[in-house]
Length: 195
Image (cartoon, rainbow, N blue to C red; front, side, top):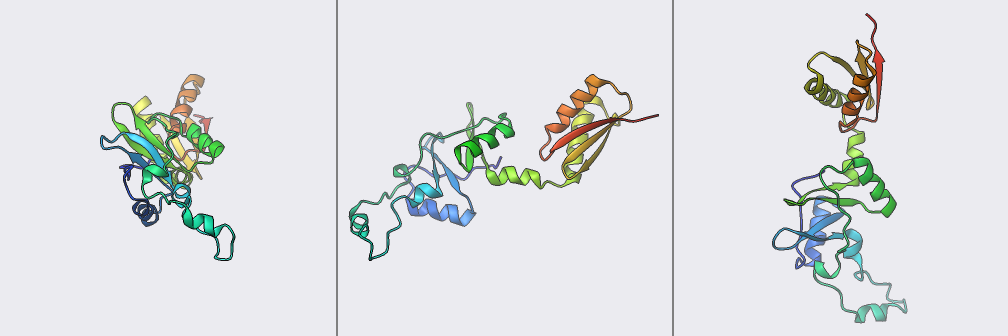
């Protein structure tokens, strides 16, 4: 997830929110009240609502020119926000984003409020993580679990191969679960080493 989170308030002008989105390359901004509680999310699509007019020759233009254009984020934001908690599985977040066609999910923690945001870009970034960084994280987690030198670790294009000298299926399963929790891991295989 991305943190700290850039937010806007319900009273933020729509133009200011649009400037933040375009200036930062975001597609959505969480909306928080004065106490920092999440009250909505404003997306590019929300900001575009009722802002663009048809060509001057269009019969729809007259109606468009007479309607009141919302000026504050509160008037255009989405209040039914899909959220996650810090321990939500990324696969579940990705599936929910795909299913609902949303691009960002705020991350909230009951005691702390808004603590981050996960965007499609964050998820795609995990696919491009360097193998050397993945290997270092897998090694660190496995050393914390079983001590240094217990597992050999190799990573190729996000696919992890764990080398095990002992051949214990229970330990191999535990090591696979630990390795698969590392950001950027696409697959885990365990091989029993001879000798």
